[in-house]
Length: 84
Image 1: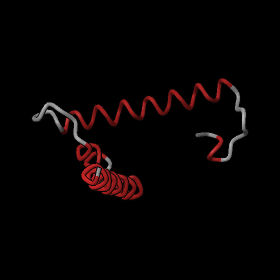
Image 2: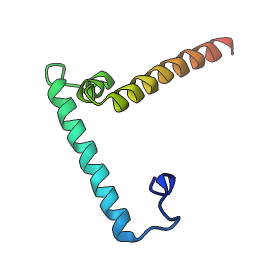
Image 3: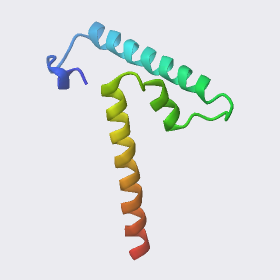
C-alpha cells in the first residue's frame, strides 16, 4: 500500500508498523460507528458503513462505486452460472 502511494519499495519496519496500526485503528473506529448505526438490526450491512462515511464525499463516492460494481459482478456471475 505504501509503495503504491510513492514510498520506497522496502520501507522501514517502524514505518510499516505505524501505518498498520493507523489503518487498524481506522477500521476499528469505522466498524464501531457502523455497529452503532446497525444496533437495532444487530448486524452490520455495507449501507451502515456508507452512512458513516456519508460526509466525506470522496470516500462516499468510492464506496457507492464499489457497491455498484459488486452488484454488477453478482448479476454477471448469476447469468454465467445459469448458462452452464
